[in-house]
Every structure is written in C-alpha cells, then in structure tokens.
Image (cartoon, rainbow, N blue to C red; front, side, top):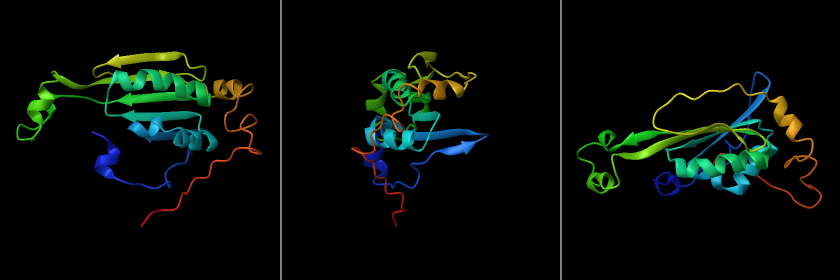
Length: 168
C-alpha cells in the first residue's frame, strides 16, 4: 500500500534527528525515503545513522539504501517487513488478488550500508535479525571531502526550508 493514499497529509514536525548517546539518528517511512527534500532535511538535521523503514521488498531497499548512504555520507539501516498470504485475514476483500502474487507478499530486504555506499549487511530475504557495529567516526571522515548539508551545500545559493509546525 502507499502511505499517501491511506494516511494522507502529515506535517514536517518529525523531520528531525534525535540524539542518542552522542549519535544523531533519523528515520523515514517507506516512500518518504525516495523524496530528495525529505532526505536533505535529514542530512541538514545532522543525522549520522538513518533508519529507512519499509513494508518489505528487496527491490525497494537494495538501490536506495546504498544511494542514500553515499549521498548523505551516513549509515543507512533499511528495515523491511515480511508478510505473506497467511498473514492476511481470510475475509479481506483483495486477498485472492494478493495470493496470486505468490506466498510471500513482502519479502524483507533488511540491509545496512556505510557512508561510502558499500554494503555492511547485504539485503536479506525473509525474517532475520540483522546487526552490525557502526563507527560514527566513519561518517565524519566521509564528510571531510563531501558534506551535503555542510561545507559543500552552498547555502549562499541553495536553501531548504522545512515547515516543522504541527498541522491541526
């Protein structure tokens, strides 16, 4: 499903990074990760580890995870859910159509990429626990030659404005 069709408009109040034990963390949900300005807002917020949450499909996570990591010079942890036809209630109106796509509707795709865009953990299919030790010093090192929200961003020419007010 697509968030925009189901959940409608949100606001920019959550487009921030959160500091935890000295590390800046951020996250976006599904297609939001494909939005260049949303990603730029996360980079500008100082994120060092970004969590990209997906309903679960290797096809969605494999390319964007590496691209986002390299673009932002950050670690990206893509988390992909897994569910199949057995997880869909028998009385769901579109269950037959969904069953036609195979036994697994969303196949996972959880993976981790480093600030250089290289895999730390390649996308996995199915249900697994994925973990890695991430050294945020690698983010700072990668940003010395290219920092998309810092010295390379040209704030004298380009500016991103985020409305972080809550929509009533």
